[in-house]
Amino acid sequence: MKTFALIFLMLLTTTLKAQVAINTDGSNPDNSAMLDVKSTSKGVLFPRMTTTEREAIASPVTGLSVYDLTTQSYWYYNGTAWTTIGNGIWTQNGNDIYSSITGNAGIGTTTPGDKLHLYSSGSLRLMIESQDPYYAGIVTRNAQREYFTGTIGDRWSVFDNYVGGERISVLPDGNVGIATTTPDPSAALDVSSTTKGFLPPRMTIEQRDAITPIAGLMIYNTTTNKPNYYNGAEWMNYDGTPAILLVGDSYQGGIIAWVLAPGDPGYTAGEFHGLIAAPADQGLGAWGCYGASITGADGTALGTGNQNTIDILAGCDDAGIAARICGDLDLNGYSDWYLPSIDELNKLYLNRAVIGGFVITAYWSSSETGPNNASLLNFLNGAQLSIEKYNGNYVRAVRAF
Image (cartoon, rainbow, N blue to C red; front, side, top):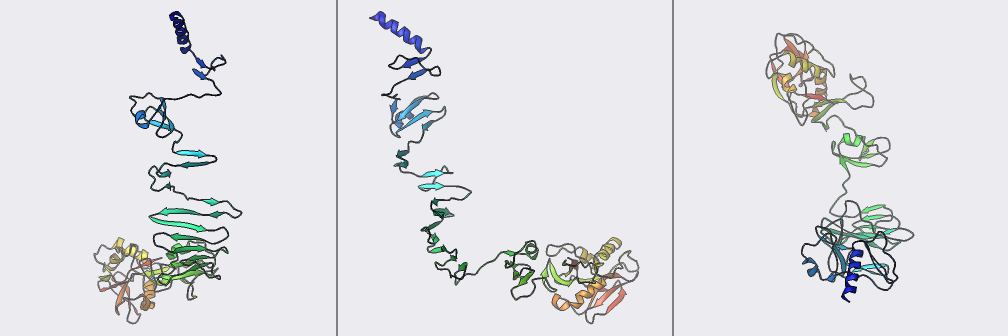
């Protein structure tokens, strides 16, 4: 008996060093398997233990597998931690799956805060199949719970669970109501409120003009502080007047003093250009460099004042002179101010009432008339005079747009 047992053990040991087959038909193990268990009536039983017992295994080897009686699932050790094979929390019942374990489920988050917590930078769509798709769902955002409800073919609504009340309603005909469940049949959008108004998009005139508009488009013009609409050909104010900038309007750091018209130097059809005056005087100063001719500072026409100022600053070092007061000015975000030529100064005089802030006295221009004299304009009567450069007179800076 001992001899038989020894022979069997030797045979078994030899087999274990190669491949092992456990079956009742005497077949060899599959070439790819170290252990090939074959049966049509019995299974393989892994070691069974509780979660506490599994976690108490000392130094588990990578690949060690057990059946956890607590979670009713298979577990294996991945070299770092125990990992479940599948998910023991979920149970299949026919085509349905369910969980009887109390807890939260997360998709896109490792810390679910609700029974089902879906976290995504995109949108969540729950669709009920029908001839016409109907969407329903619950979304939590910034502690505001919003939910969509209704029946197919009926209206759907958005509710606010915290504030209370219905916020948006959409009827089957497509009419939308905000803060009303019964939008007027004549209105595609009916906004109901006795305490709040409608706020259209707000933008500057430059931003508005960058739009390719469609007839009926509405915006609020923050440059003119007026609501505008597009009539299919041009932007209009709500009173029916063209929504363009006019002399006297605030614009780009100052007040529009002149808009170039046909015949003016620099005028281009279809473009909007002109002069902007500083909102107030820059004080008093001499013209400067009495007895010296400043090369290039003799321009008088519209559009010559800036170059006059550049030439004066390049050819005259006197401190506190009119051109330097304007050239060094940094006002309301703009630093390209200059002393106007005599013709530019005359445009300020013609529109002095809507520009505002002038005193009834003389103002320097940047137009030199000789080594000793330069042009000024008297805002009492519009007289243009040539006087000595050392006189102190008022200064009003301008810039072109």
